[in-house]
Image (cartoon, rainbow, N blue to C red; front, side, top):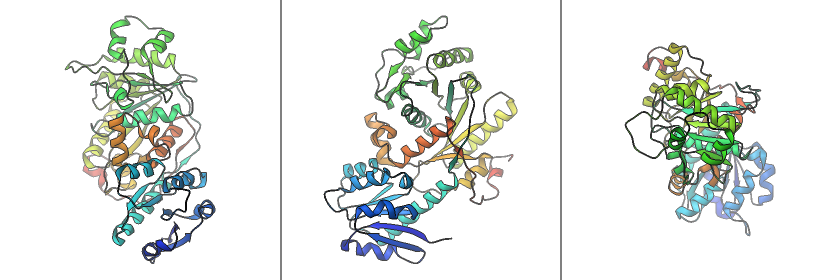
Length: 403
């Protein structure tokens, strides 16, 4: 394997980092002038930001790196002199992939750099390429987000994906909360809509006109997403039959050109109707055996059902600090290629959940936000996943039955 190329922005105070960053197997370049960073960083695998000369701050430097297209995907490790949580959040929102606090432990620094380099190499293996895609309804697209395993983040993916699409075409994207225990989409966006999908079902004996649907039942988020909120009421009854679900999603897509539907994790007629109507199906999975087994079984079910659903797009939501399964492992277990891996940062996502500000809105240059933007590009036909080259382990598919 080629040496890992590391670029360090620092001065004499950064000397203790040099012995770790410049160990055998790595090639280290150190610059003191921030103006040299953009030119020097293009050919590097990891950027370490340590000593930033005033008047710039460490967060300013993160933003400058992310503003350079050639550096937008290069991992950035920021070395901070304060252990304040708010400072770490500011750095993550500014585009840092990881943050370390002084004093620096050599072993931890070594492990952090290795992890960033490995993540970067794996991401490049799943780099998107150009694709021209078609839809069932000319000029309109419906994306269904689903997982047969609960707790993997379908609502998080749905919300951030919708915001990424809205960044391209504001007010031309609707987000529909079709989960049986609804209300989470509106909560994630800090919306308090007067009407929900339950009101739409009760009020519309026939088809509601696109104009009324758009002006009355869809609540606008400041990010340019129109939201049909789920009913927050708890119930043991099914949300709706399949034909009702079809009528609602067809009604929304007649009013708004692009629709993202959060389906949650239950499998019923509502879900199957939405999947049949979708142009794109996003299946969310976490890198653990219970989630992989559930998705594997679901793919088998779709194959045996012989329906008309689209080929799924697999999104891995990395919710664990320690990643033990590689992209090759996951693809072997599922028998499908992974389109995007969404990196997880507990501080960013915890803040998003508690403040109703999704990661794509609060930290648009962060690595998770950039992955959501790539996912939007894939689904809109701008990009598609390239071929993965990492060797796959044998035998994982056998854990779940047929390969």
